[in-house]
Length: 78
Image (cartoon, rainbow, N blue to C red):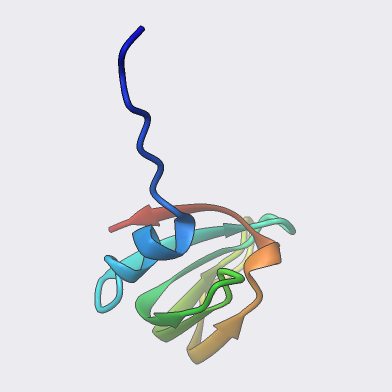
């Protein structure tokens, strides 16, 4: 097999999404949706205009949020 495997680091991938709306599934089951405004090498993120979705509860507006990357299960671009 003569192929080259290229690997994109998570931070580099996240940086492409700065300025876009994303959805984050957190370890505790909550979902946050907001505009990604920044991230660092630990995948900590800052979001603006953030909404929190919790099953069986009314959505909440949170505004600006700073989130530890270790709490995130998955990330989707909206």
